[in-house]
Image 1 (cartoon, rainbow, N blue to C red):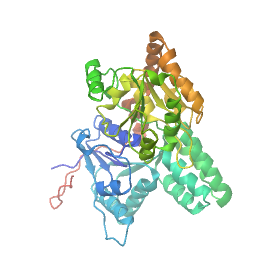
Image 2 (cartoon, helix red, strand yellow):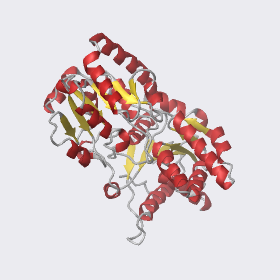
Image 3 (tube, one colour):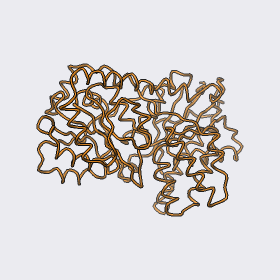
Image 4 (cartoon, helix red, strand yellow):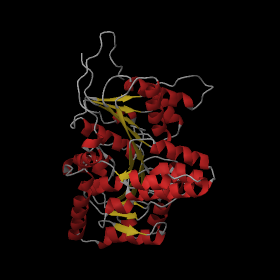
Length: 437
């Protein structure tokens, strides 16, 4: 029996976590199967760890299946209760070392520097120190919370040691990627701040090495939804086409959900449309309490990936008034692109972080945190736009959004010089078959 010819391992918070970057991992994995990788693995966390972290999760019984050739691994923790967090890190690191011990050319991509890049760097270092001679190339992709949460918080609290550790780990990889130009600029700015205080030289290396890799999106899942399927999905939810404004994202302060509820309460369009808040998150219970007596606001906490494009296509407008907060800034806005691909009413959003890179000039833009401007924008989208205007906005948005198709993004990221050598290696007689889950 022969081993795989070429392997891709992605260390990430994968499904069922509600996060655009879990979708990124899925899309890169699917394209990899068509680009010479015959073994693709998502190395992620056990369900108990995800639930204990309080992360918003999709309904576990309605997750989209992965194609054959993609294996989701959730290594069990190593150690007992006396090692509270490190047990899971040890499990992930140990499993990756086992994969690297096999003589298979491998690319390891980590998404979220903390802690996934630590896992990859530590596993590769250990494998090399043990004399396993892994055939591996490492890629680290910095996403939103790496910079706006981990690094910025460390700098704000004057924990420069944590920032130094993160930059050192990041730069230890062969290839460095940022999810947007905004994120790349933030990485460099943070590195400059660390350099000033600590005498390090991170910024120059970040400027030289960090490239942009936009989120890969499965455009085929959103383009041209079947009108009959849209109508059926809306009817099942008690909704009508163009009869609701849609917020579909993590329900959190940084997503502007409080501004949205306040703006909708004072809008004129509320007489014609409902507001649908789809998603879960830390602010959900508080927002539900705020809207308890407003029958025009509908909450959906169980929307799956199949229903998402249907709700997006049927809405009068998609509203994501994201705003910068100390712990989060929208570094791209994957949901914005998904909505632009789906058609239907226009996108209403803010220029916060990297959202401008996601929408181009195709959306209705309001100032972040400006509730009155948000109200005016919703009224304009519902009451002021003609049918031809709406169709033209949808066309332009769709044409812009296809630039983020997952095949285009994959090919730009995995250029030939970043691909491992392809060769077939026979498993020695005494070796056992790699474990799958």
